[in-house]
Length: 167
Length: 206
Image 1 (cartoon, chains in turn red, green):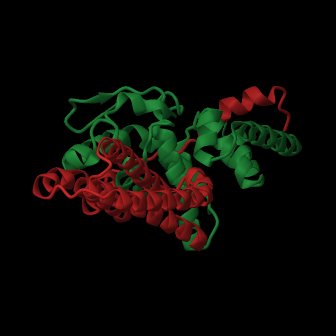
Image 2 (cartoon, chains in turn cyan, red; image 1 turned 180 degrees about the vertical axis):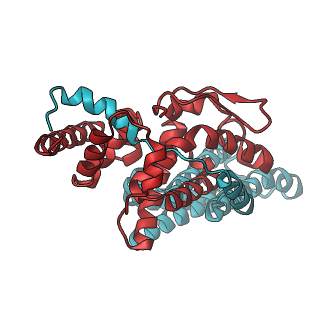
């Protein structure tokens, strides 16, 4: 076979390879199956988001009620202990972050995105509570809630590291 | 025979909506796509199905053809297209608009075809002679037949890029996204495909 201008001839003939035929019932089949198939749910993602939201709602709202009910104040000594505990959490979180963040930032998995969202939420709540605590260092409840947020962040980082090990 | 980039405009059943897409793979901007207008959960199933139907009407000719090239018969090709649209419907929230809707569907379709082939444990088994005749009323049947025969002898990845580019009118950027390969690789495979085809067709008696 002689093809003087191969590229031109091929480009002229190749579109003839496109296949086309009638499929009168294909859409009906797709629609029927799509109706039965709900959009894919991602329960773990919703669960993580819901857990983080509930936690934050509880943490952020309770001081408002608690302050009115029991204005518990820390003594100087108790405040020192709280600050030491906070510093211990901060060190622990820093170490865990150093281990978790490379894989967390790199991973394209939706689960990683959910963890990142949760950690962002926690960071934001910690930052808000810290500001509140600075203006009221002796409020026991604010300090307790701050500690629970640190615990939650620590646990989230540990969970992710555990998850990354298993995968 | 309609060229891949020259198909007629298509309208939905009611005739009220016309999707005018001379470039089917870039139809995303013209359609209220499944996940981009409103969050999935606040749109009704009927709305989403209506949108899916519009997309179906513009994208299906090309998808069926690609599936046919991969699977070798109409029934399997239709099954693959069906599975593609169902998967797309279920995963609509994952469509981020980074590629055209057609390219996204094409990528799903290619995965579906691979799955189907694995499940059925056989390679593409062309050809349906009756279909071949009605599908392509070519002016040069001998060259077309020779080209088809030569295509079956080149590596599948080269064949796929050749068919997507030359027969289906896709651009290298679209092919690269659909096959999840770099654009340069798509160009290189097309070059290889043409080189091999040229050699085979030059050797064959006309």
